[in-house]
Image (spheres, rainbow, N blue to C red):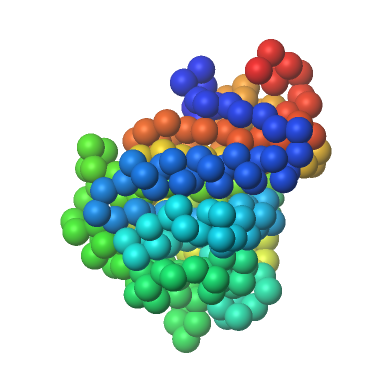
Length: 248
Ligand code: 6PG
């Protein structure tokens, strides 16, 4: 269960405070990383302010960009310059402003190939970076896995009732016919291969989904996220106003 007593739950009055706290936390995690700092980014709106902050001089100088590698937990099957693209959002908010080597930016391929081919190509990219074809829980692929929460309880592009929820072999899969546009997503075993995992959740619209995840509702994909390390929930007051969080 992704929100258990073992989880770190941190609630902030505003999304701005949340973004600043996660930026500080990201710097702290980077200082604990080894030769490479592997950051798996999430899409959607909530992490955008975090990305903008990490690009500011105050934070930029505290991240080892030369040994930082950026990946994505999921992507919309649109060109990388499309406003709906998770790559595009992170590029505009963060990556084009910081001295990260171009070869350290590992975007999910969405152009000139089918979503299935894009998923397979990205699995190859991840395995090449990892240096093996099977994951070892003692050696997580990522240092940080950033995730969001949809109002229906989806995370990355793992949607309620989707066959992708039971995938245990493939590292990356196409997601067709859920919410348009089609998507490509990492699967649960790969999402779990992270030294730490952080959910960023803001806004009243997330209150019900958050309460259900807190109650361990298995119908919500976010409830079933595991991690090789600790799971942090960074939540704003508007989302955490559910009784389930009254004692936090
Ligand atoms: C995506 C995301 C998705 C997102 C949630 C929350 O591609 O949309 O990866 O899982 O994190 O939908 O999105 P918001 O932060 O925009 O509410």
